[in-house]
Length: 492
Image (cartoon, rainbow, N blue to C red):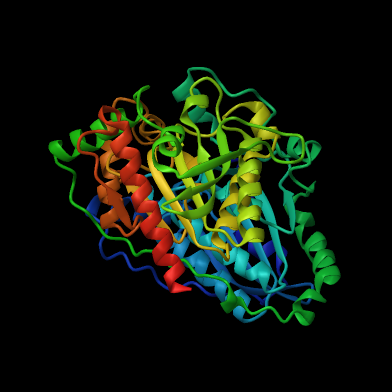
């Protein structure tokens, strides 16, 4: 990051009224961190001058009371682990309770790779807190700083009522270093640039740090009525607790081999997907097509379906079409059509996750892919109908997370969820792709690991593997869907 760009503390000092800032941050609990990670955190704190990648608090900006969430990129690339996520969620909920407008100034590379899938899932917790804040009629303003990428941009960084960006800031779904490492070619210049995102209608404006106080005060003046007139109750919205950090021993060679074998199994061309699930397990299926606004993407299948006599709306990622053409923004807009339909009809929503990752092309970036992921997560966390998600196979990145936050989560025995392709995560941590199996096990991406971490509710065993008996596999998944829908309906 350029030395001319202010860090978190400098930004706060330059924007808020003198002597008005009060920190909300509590000392971090580092229990459970192994010695290596603890040393990494200490070194990062010394470099950044902060104890974490996030600072929160309360202040005034030209007399307007606000809550602040500010990222510090110098602390491990601004990455979000569970401690940082817990700090963010606590600040959002406090802002909602105290009826304060919220300003988030992001600067992050996304999920903290040292913590893997459990940290990745915290983007759901943060997004749900933002949804509740907005649902209470309170303003949420976002300032995207250099750089803002990955899960932060594809969740709470893309949910603002007003979104502005720092001049020249790198803002994108996938960091260019990872893209080049995985694909062997650099990402085209200028696409992930703040000014280009304004041109494409993704960001509202570009404003330098010295102009932030002025634009924030003007926006808060115009929006001040919303903090007084709303009677929305934040308790009406669901909360998604952030899991505490639990240190785990280094995975054994057997554990590494098991996780990697599962990943390779889900990547087989003959592995059954959502089409086989519907063919063998659904009572009836009426396929639907498109967003209703002139877009269609075969990466997602939308249908009215029935499992065990229980009608539902199904949104499923279709692996057949994601080999040659990745899942783009239109696919997620189609998914959101399904979410709206389920809500309007009062039907359960079933989502099926099976994706090697969302489209990483310039067209997808300029088509608001990150924003559509964020809006899918927001819609999923605020559903009022029963919802069940099924991790059927591959679960790579934001494209998978977009459909995951249901009330109940089913995972096939070999399914997995990771913030990046394991090869991409290895590129970040080890500067190569050779350590992908080790890192996948460390990041606890596997179904059994996620069950232990409380991220999935039910595992449907694969014995034999799904591709060896697709019909029996589909029937078992279908039975699990029926059972989970019945359980949710019984709860009322």
